[in-house]
Amino acid sequence: MTRLVFVLNGPNLNLLGQRQPHIYGHETLADVEADCRRIAQELRLELRFHQSNREYEVIDWIHEARESAAGIVINPAAFTHTSVAILDALNTFEGTVIECHISNVHKREAFRHHSYVSLRADGVIAGFGTQGYQLALRRVAKLLDEKAN
Ligand code: DQA
Image 1 (cartoon, rainbow, N blue to C red):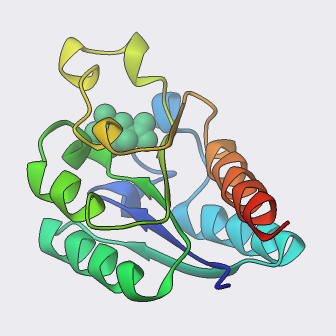
Image 2: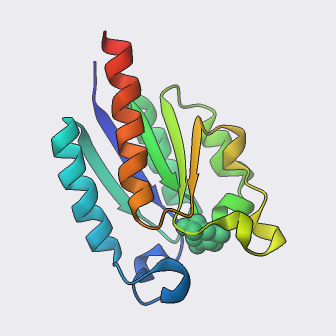
């Protein structure tokens, strides 16, 4: 069985480390990717790591994941709160979906409290900083291991 996992990041996350560091911290997306690669190796997961400011690109990666991946870890960023199209794409994916937010969206503005993606996600992580990505990968790996046994 495939152990390929897509880690997808939505708009403005390319500016991680520079963007509102009091909310999102000082780590860059390259740091997050490096952490994810280290954890993936430990967990024997194969990883694809992407970021885009364009909704259609995120959708295209979800379509790619449909054909090859066991899981998707997605921080849809602002698309979380707006994108029925990303929800529809995730609904075509049969593997595990973990929604991951760096900040605790529930502690923030009311418009961040609603997530379209949560209607599909098997689990949601919010407010664990960039460590959330590592926890999400651990969860995907655990579910895969359970399925394999
Ligand atoms: C975010 C939270 C979203 O509300 C926001 O639009 C983001 C980042 C997070 O990781 O905390 O861009 O997804």
